[in-house]
Length: 618
Image (cartoon, rainbow, N blue to C red; front, side, top):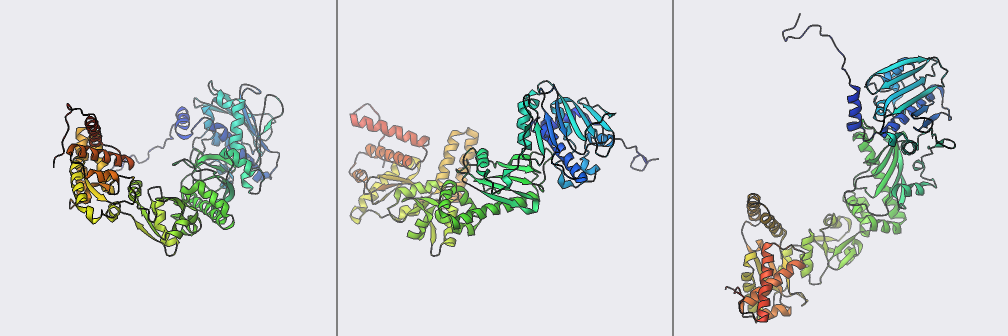
């Protein structure tokens, strides 16, 4: 009988069919980063088994893990643990059913005492072996059992009539090409990398001599350890600037933070080492706030959650809370250093000024301590913020590097102007009135600075105006206006100045000239729209300016030049020189002006009559 929707009243449920080859391919290509993690999974299973036995029978310090690499006692790799062991039923449930979580669920043991969270750990061994043999004897007294799994998806379970020791052994029959992962050197390296700080004995058999003990006490969990500096030097590759403990009690996280002695490259990813239950989880975990990129952390945690591959942490509320707590420890260390060791703080700021500028933007209490040690670039040179506000309480600054270069070129030697074009510097300057009483700040307008310069004396005003008209006409092709001002120095003949929108418009025009006709037209129309929006009145401020210095002998000599061609080409060269001095790129029009000017001046200087000169048109 069926319902109106056409569904059978009693449909038979059927299990999914799992292709083990497909599962192994999924593990190796999309979950685990490398076949090398097979040993981590074996260590994890061994650690979990010993933990389960300890909870049942009490801890015995002699219990541990023994690994015999392939090629030491035979062609196979053998992994043994002194854990709780498995019965025949547990073997079938745990090792032969993909998706079963762990023996912790079968034995109803506390979850937080186990590293394993997924039932795919043993399957990772198929990335290096075609056959896995598990021999185990449970401490419950059940008969020993052997489970043999093959990469074709088949397995057998056999009860053994042997008096095996309690625990489990895993034998891997390596497939050809996996020698790089199962040989003696690789196994020793992987065992030390993943299990160096496990709270149990991990031994690796060697071809000569006794087994090698790879486990040791985690020095990073003892902030008073005399070996901490050595460990930090091995971690960083250089002597750490300092170290201090960090912790988050809410997630059972604690460890040590090492301060880099130098600033890391911009955009460098965090390289923090994280252990889960004292087994290595990741060396690239982002467990610190982004602003703390001057620190490298090594932590052990019991409360953070690993991803399915157990190679990183799940970015959840627990990790966010841990980041906040560890960031607070970093902040507290900086504040303690400022209060107790100011000489060290000065050295620290010199190495990590960018990180500290980012930090103080979000923490004004910390800014009160460290801001005075920071430095900024000004028109009078680099100076500390403390010196700047003490001697010049009215701080003037530019927003961009281009603006600073223009202003620096016309600065008359008055109060310094701060270059706010570097990362965070403009934001820091704007904070100063909140940090220092009596300090004010002013954003400098480039064109305003030009207008504030003194005009030529009254007696020279008519000649200066005539020069301005002729210069503007000479530069009409590049839409630059000529102005004449009196600078306090005479060695600068001309300065190119423009507001930021004019500079952006010039960039757009250069891009349009290099693009295809289609895209060039689109960029040109966009520039026309944006330029009109920035300067709706179309006044002279919408054009760049060539500011000629009236105190310069070269500019004064232009008054006497009657030859229009000589005047025009001289102005063109002064314009190009001013562009280059201000670090402005040359477009096609500027390069054309420079080439023509140099050719014509050369012809005039040697008296070449057969060269066509372009006259100045009034």
